[in-house]
Amino acid sequence: MPKPVNRIYSSYGTTIFTTMSMLALEHDAINLGQGFPDRDGPLQVREAAARYVVEGPNQYPPSGGMPALRRAVADNNRRFWGLEVESSQIIVTSGATEALAACLMGLLNPGDEAIIIEPFYDCYLPMIEQAGAVAKVVALRPPHWSVPMEALEAAFSDRTKLLILNNPMNPTGKVFTREELSDIAALLVKYDTYAVCDEVYEHLTFDHWRHVPLMSLDGMAERSLRIGSAGKTFSLTGWKVGYITGPQGLIDQVAKAHQFLTFTTPPALQLAVADGLGMDDSYFNGLAADLESKRDFLRATFAGIGLEVLPCHGTYFLTVDVASFGFNGDDVAFCRQITKEARVAAVPNSAFYHPASEPPHNLVRFCFCKEPDVLAEAAKRLQSWAGRS
Ligand code: PMP
Ligand code: GLN
Image (cartoon, rainbow, N blue to C red):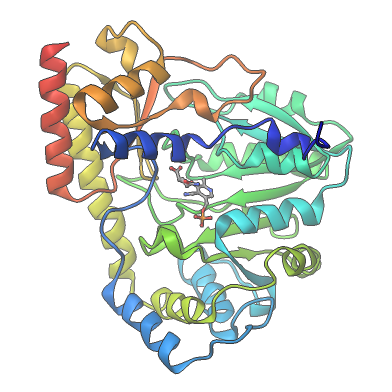
């Protein structure tokens, strides 16, 4: 018998995003599963990247990131969120995924507890487990996904090291209210806990909803690490450029994990993202307005075929209740069936739950950051499938 490999990773299968994307390919389905836009972000940012690749630099950038990008992230923290930070308080990472890994590895010791809010983005749990820590799960309930404060407080103990807060939240489309954030902040102070704030959808909020970084609340700047992603902000998900903002002492610690993970990130992409972050407000507002109209279109499509749609205030994702449609199977069966029969792929919400939890089995996530003609074709296929079912 060969020696056993790592027990954490070997206990996981392939991610739901890869699984559904492969099934979509196999059936020539429109992929509303994995969250990525089908139109690349601003041409000027892509052209800048090409220019920087040709003109350089092309050797290892400083581990913390290109100074221009660190400055641009600090400027954006001020411009959009009123956060006053120095460039030295920013680390550039290879996507928000590496940012999360660096934060968790930089903060957690074996035996620590980390609170995660369910449903949660898929990489949180294996990263916590691999750090030797224990995940304490607090479940939000549909349709409003409000924070159950008593259950949240019950999850804290003297071993709690950190809480991961994904706001705006994938897969639910929830945007945390200021009241919820204040209540969470009070618990973080009471139990002297850090916050790792996954805010990759910071610019993607709709209607009157506005993102509020937890870090901007009283007492939070000294205990929060705030993560952003150029992938989401510039519709360039394949670039994998992320950034972390935090208090100097914590950032210096996280930088040590980052230097042993990837050390750095391609310089041309960093410089192009720095240029992108310098674009004026109309770009950022336009991105959200465009997504909002796409959400509206898909929402109306679902309503038209009798599928109940849950509220969605931000992100790329809309959740529907397939039980409302009279579908007999669970969310996984529904996703497989529409991929094969309607040729539209989606992601089952139950994939975002801890293996020991009891997830709802009636919720399905659809990604709406697609071109209008693609969404229109998806709508046509779903309508005709619903007519047949
Ligand atoms: N966090 C959340 C909530 C996400 O949805 C994603 C992916 N889209 C990430 C982190 C990872 O971002 P990146 O592609 O920049 O690594
Ligand atoms: N964040 C994307 C989503 O939620 C997936 C990214 C990935 O495939 N790892 O769909």
